[in-house]
Amino acid sequence: MSEFRRGWKPLTAALIGTACGASPIPFNVLPLVLGPVHAEFGWDFAQAAAGVTIFGLIASFLAPVFGGMADRYGVRRVAIGSTIAFAIAFAAFWFMPPSLGGWYILWAVLGLVGIGSTPVTWSRAVSMWFQKNRGLALGLMLIGTSISAMIVPQVVTRAISAYGNWRIAFPVAALFPLLIALPVALLWFCEPRPDERPAGVADASGALVGLTLRQAAGGRHFWILFASILIIATAYGGAHIHMAQIVALHGFSPQAAASTLGVVALGILTGRLVVGLLFDRFWAPGVAFPVMLMPALACYLLSGTGSSLGIVMTGGFLLGLAAGTESDVIAFMAARYFGMAHYGRIYGMLYMPFGIGSAISPIIYGVVRDRTGSYDAILFAAVFMFIAGGALLLALGRYPPSEDLHGERA
Image (cartoon, rainbow, N blue to C red; front, side):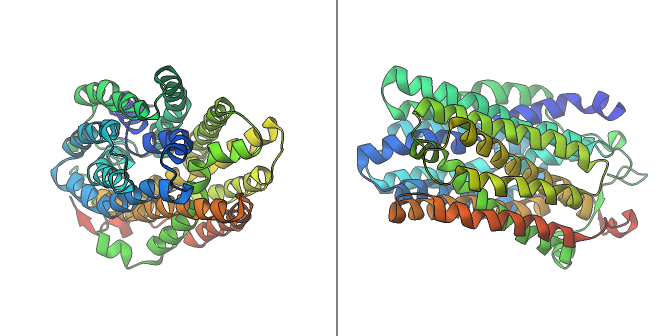
């Protein structure tokens, strides 16, 4: 509990920053405007969804760069600067010209500036404040995405209904990072001083210990994590973006779709807290694998048409567990297997497959929908992807001894 007494302020700032950052907000707004964009411009679902693919790919390739900047210059500067830039870029969608090229350019700009407002930065500070309770602390930080998914779709849906224009969704959502996350981060977000760092994060002198990116990438743990994250993100990302359309195919209203996204958020929240708590007490890969069997079941429940709303929402909840667990996997295992000295860069490299999978997945789901009229084929493929991605984690083996993480001081 002493860790929470020392670190609750930066943890709270990181939670709010995660909730209002580029990780959850675009993915909670796009599902609600995908249908109106399709109706207004006549773009097919794959073309419209490709915007978030561009955003995700650019952000993913820049994640190690922003992570390295956080390692070198301090996470506070990077996180706050990127939060401001993300809010401005997202609000700019209000001015989008009626062209597919303009749509793609705005998503590209968002990817260039937004990645520093994601857990790539926030989790570095949290992992430096917490060691014994790191899984729980990271889980608490990452429930920010769940809070965002429960609140943002409801606010955005009401704004669209009130103004009769889907464009209003973007400046309204941009108020979250600008008016909520930014003031709290300015007040409370910081890294611990060397004398405040817990044992296991730093050596006796307070210097951070851990492997360099080169050392981490030279071992099997890094590439097992890389492959697992890529497979699971590809299975999940498109299902989330197209969730409103999946719900519509079962015969339900946009309001029901927004409620289902809220249930997905509840599943994410459950995964974050429960899995994070279990990670502190048990071998993390052994916890993650059985949890990944639940979203596999979810994809089966979401397939077809005409299911009851209860079945659809159950599928949404179980699917949310995948996102909740995977984010914990990236943050927790990057610190546990590779140490903190170069955490930002290593986390950024492991965020890359997450971003790439999340980016290409909406296009795959969209292509399947455009060509077959349903999502069944890709949902059935996702069943096996969740199982395979979870099973890969079992190959990680035991945690490395602390002495093996003394690759470099920082």
